[in-house]
Length: 152
Image (cartoon, rainbow, N blue to C red; front, top):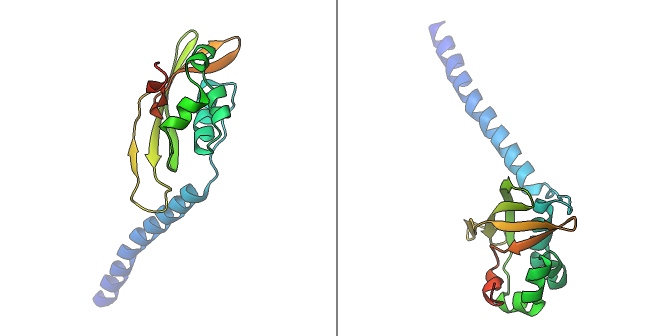
């Protein structure tokens, strides 16, 4: 009788790790295959998302449209183009600091297509945006670094 209770106890020890592993596997699969959240373009974080999505899509006109009017005058789509090509990347929204007419959006980037462990992640620094005439415009660009090309 004593032998049976030890065997039952050993079987129960495996249940917790198996259940925990299964839960982690399911959560990992959900994270891998979920669609990205699309943010409202009328917000500062939505403007940064639209900018980065345009860079990823190689839609330089749309990327340029997300810049503030003063930065649009200093930077052309050719400036954006000259800093490319842009590898596949994913962006993760970080902290958002809101002030009167300025918002700072922190983003973490991971370069690579996500199919292997070859990519690397980094924090490029914040995107600064100002609210002008009811529209958010990027006044300082963290990545890609094309703003060096246009003297900002």
